[in-house]
Figure (spheres, rainbow, N blue to C red):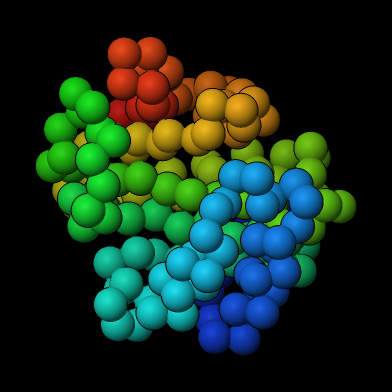
Length: 156
């Protein structure tokens, strides 16, 4: 199975909306309209976020993004410094691609892109406490769990 990332395009918005509504995705991605707004605003107000479609053997299978944490206006970084910190989000939208290595491959590709950013020092991620699949994936990909701050960290 060949997994690749390609830039998100306008015509991907309806597909992203469908994925966000999928039973296996919607519990973890609240406020789907905000996700769509960010993706559609990628050329303007949200240009600091890098949005991608996960392709599996050339077919759209999911969505992912990364961003400099400092630009997000978030404050869940705990003891992790803001400078040099990036965060990411990912989802496998097509149920046929669940539990077959697509998420792991996409995560690795996303981390490679972050590591190529000149100021990147670390990636932090804070999946929902109930999202055991995502938490297990992050551990398998080399992230360590910072229990004090309830987030996953990977030095790049």
